[in-house]
Image 1 (cartoon, rainbow, N blue to C red):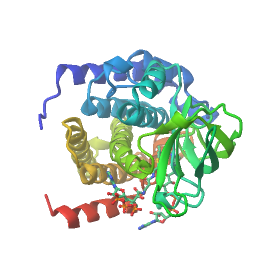
Image 2: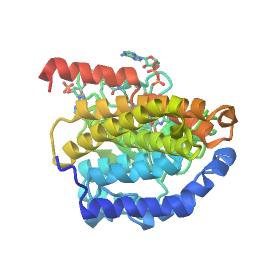
Image 3: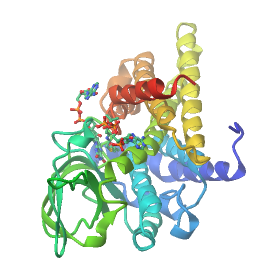
Image 4: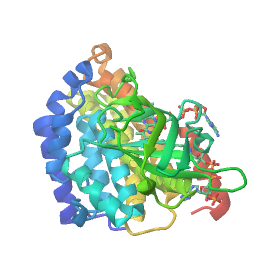
Length: 375
Ligand code: CAA
Ligand code: FAD
């Protein structure tokens, strides 16, 4: 792994930092209060190519790779984690379409995601009764002469009120066969799709999280994405990459917290200097783990699940610890609800939940360790 950033990776990082400095960071706190979805900043990110950093240029992406993508998410999360998660989910959806889609599916949808014509895509896997046990989903797609009919409910879907496209996982097995779970492209404006009210979360208020109900939604026969019955594998592959995105988001949160503590003079006090330096070292360790997982994906490694889960597990724990500790070191004023450090503590919590809880990352790591042995 090359530890020196390339000119193209630096360029992506610089583009992200500039938009963050000019537009995203100055409005992060007011957006946290208003819970306003960041449509204008998503458009700015798209105009700079940052809604498709790892997407091929013929689909409107920057084709700058996964390491550059991680650097961009880190920068955006440092300014506002809510914008970063929206960007990360859009990326995950775009990559699934670009990798598994037919030529027509790719050309119809991915350029709209990279250009900002769609403010985002949504990844619709979790359900009210199946989050960690994703294979336990109840949503079902039934084949009919006109296409597929989808029935079911998805829960906690990021950007669901604003997405231009939904990727929806559903059971497709019929008695006597083994056609498991399949993946479908669903137009959010179709009859029978209803979007629930935004969830009132403890943090990341400017990101949008909703439930979605599908009531006999008719989609065309060619809306199947990838092979029939192979959707669960696609979800797992996408989440390997998605976890690099959330690890990157977590690092951005930790970077922001440490910087706020430094600005408050925390590192200057002998009593807190030790804690401060250790936090810095832990953030860098998590960053290297994350960049390594990103690099493995970038060079086409066929199995980087363990590395992606280790990065997500470690970076999300570091983000939570660093944000809480920095708040304590700065003192009571930082505990006010709308203080930037209090916001980071609130924003950090969910990094240990979505894209697989910390316990699920441990399951993935342990299974791979047992199967393939230690490093
Ligand atoms: N790559 C490719 N294939 C994989 C894979 C991977 N990383 N992991 C598993 N598979 C395949 C297996 O090989 C197996 O295939 P066969 O049936 O052909 O043998 C199949 O998938 C089933 O695998 P498992 O037996 O391991 O599946 P499981 O039911 O035991 O589940 C799990 C394992 C790790 C717990 C999984 O369910 C999981 O990751 N759960 C967490 C779900 C999650 O992360 N949800 C996030 C939703 S998106 C989100 O949250 C976005 C956001 O917030 C912003
Ligand atoms: P459960 O699976 O019910 O878990 C409850 C507890 O039990 C957890 O502590 C968990 O770690 C533990 N547990 C469960 N199974 C095991 C096990 N096998 N071993 C050890 N411990 C276990 N989902 C999407 O599909 N798309 C999205 O865009 C999306 N966005 C989200 C945004 C937000 C803000 C949130 C909060 C969630 C989002 N999710 C999304 C859902 C998220 O992926 C799930 O919440 C997560 O996977 C956990 O599932 P669950 O909430 O059903 O918890």
